[in-house]
Amino acid sequence: MPPVALLTFPVVVGILFSRLDWQRAAIWSILGGYLYLAPGFAIMLPGLPILSKPALPALMVALMIFLQKDSDKAVPAPPPKGAFMTVLVVLALMSPLLTAATNSDPIQEGITYRPGISATFAIGDLMRAYIEILPFLLAYRLLWNAEGARLFLQILLAAMLVYSFFMWVEVRFSPQVNVWVYGYFQHDFSQTMRYGGFRPIVFLEHPLWVASLTLMTFLAAIGLARLEPSRRNILRAGYLALLVVICKSAGALMLSILSMPLVLLGRPQLIIRVALIAGTAAFAYPILRTTSLVPLEAIVETAKSISLDRGASLEFRLMNEEKLLERAMERPLFGWGGGGRSLYFDSWSGRISAIPDGLWVIWLGSLGILGYMCHFLMLLGPIWALARVAHRHRADRSMDRELLPLACLSMMLATNLVDILPNATATPITWLIAGVIFGNAQRLAKGIYDTEPQTGMPMPQPAQQGLKTVL
Image 1 (cartoon, rainbow, N blue to C red):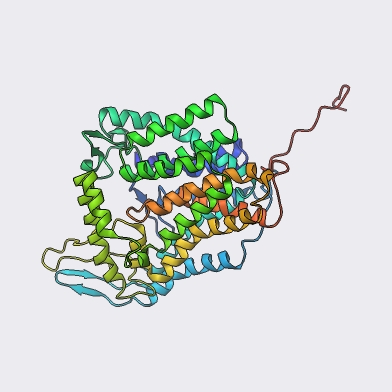
Image 2 (tube, rainbow, N blue to C red):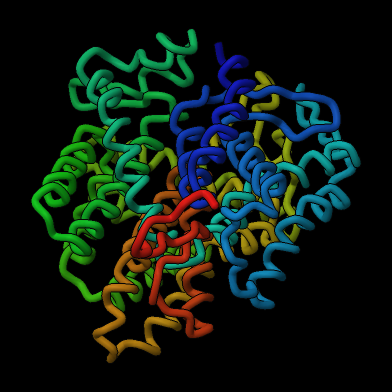
């Protein structure tokens, strides 16, 4: 079943692009593929990128845009990226090649042997790096206008409302949806059991991924309720709050409690400013964790006082971080590369002795400081760009309505950046959000405001008086 789903998904993308405008088709394709395709399964063909759940939707959207580039559905080109973001994109793509050039030596530790990185492996890493940032580039190309930002929030909310049915099924009957559909369970079943019950995983990689996406959708629902305070939108936001609770993730619940009042009541400029501070703190975490500004021992003790199990889990993660950070600093600039070279293995048993959980330490270990900075700044840079624009319009109340969806997206992205410190929850949706923010920030920086929808679809013309014959 997983191969059938992957191989037929291009047909689904083709149908979406034939029926919808580019913006809606792209959002539904990437979001639908991420939510429903089989997790942890990939088709590997010689000379082609790995066709997997994160990769295939974005590749197919890019292909459809190329095939339909001359159609009347085409979205106008976005403003230029600017030198800073262009350099980041180029360095992010070059980083795997530089890593390969400095890691041609094999590693022999006890009974474990890890080969050096060959030229073929380096090209594969380059393809993977491009596929990882492709949703960012697609969102920047297609969703750079105000209509694109609002559409993304609306479609994300609609998709998660449908997805919530499967979440409730798994909470009630245990996580079995992926087994029923694809015939296998994608993770450790014990990870789905929390607080005397189950937490949903559906078709994603881990229950924490579901919690992270639900949290972001909850913030999107609040933003839409502020834009249009109807009874339906308010009820949707309340329902999403309940979904965050049933995900049974302490991190997602804490982030929702901290961010909800701000998104609900704050001015867009304030929301963006707080998102910038949170994202910058997450970016600086590898340095801050070595100072008194991040009292790790006090945080662990506080977590243990709330829940002994959760506190022990946090302590285990931090101990692993210490080991992996030491390993990463042995080759700090370009990292160790893939193939488990950045990990610690037991010399006698050959098993992994330090488990990487946080995405930041994975980036730092495999890609080095250069790769870490490129990837993190591509996600954080859009919030910086939007903060500059928001500061320029801080006294202009008429801009609040246009900035509110972008402020909501900034807070969604900031919570995800904080979440990738303990977890590896950066997904194609994360990159999609960053692209939407950056495209709109560049638009506002160029003085292009939301005067009319720019979806790429022809606007309906007023009806003409009189009868109109074929002749």
